[in-house]
Image (cartoon, rainbow, N blue to C red; front, side):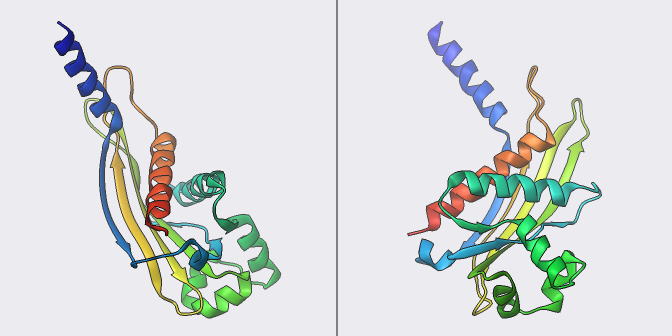
Length: 185
């Protein structure tokens, strides 16, 4: 009887865990000192949900700050710097300025650039949340991407557990930051 219970518990845990699809790039031997001060730009929203970029930016920044191992310039500080310099649209900042200019502007060694690629409830017997994030870290002096990951997560509804877009985004952010930390020396 006990083996059946163990199998059922494993199935429940597997279904609760959801499904991830990801691709990652990392320069070999990234040292935490290379990241220096990292400016987090507001995430680009490539979805039909009007606030997906802002929500993901806030959740990612909170997770990043909670790890207490990165020197972070938050998106609020980025917006303040942009408004002081009369740059009105944060989404066009990458095309209008070089990485060196942005490094000088934000007093940052690296810049974290993110986008939300999926943010919706998948239709089915039960609606399940699907979230996709694309993150990269660029060194401001060289413009070189030293770490990047693209990840999508789809929760699996099981019994009474359905999940939410917010919870799924939090899980993705936590996973991305842990993946980044695991690549650091």
